[in-house]
Length: 137
Image (cartoon, rainbow, N blue to C red; front, side, top):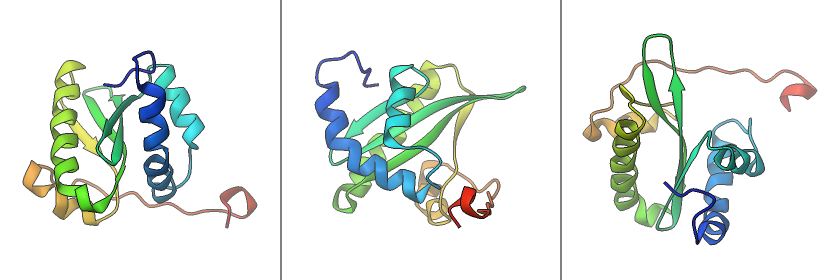
């Protein structure tokens, strides 16, 4: 976990900003990088930088389960598998640290195949529709 109070946070955040911005756009643009930074500063999200990339985790509390959510992940594709291995290990670590029952994420269909070797299985699909000027459509 990279707390915003740790030495080197500002540099790591600045390096990671382009990856976070890209992930946000692909995720539906409900948040800005500034929104994510605020979540990290308020300790509502966990910033985890890696070589040429970054992940953002949150904890989702449901009535019957507590899950670590991989909210955002972005990085250069040439370091993809190495970074992904590190991110998946970090997700398991933070899930245990935060007493979660498991890990979840919502993403593009291609993630199903990529994450299968890590033990992830298809569970559901998320559909969305933008409306008029409020939906940028």
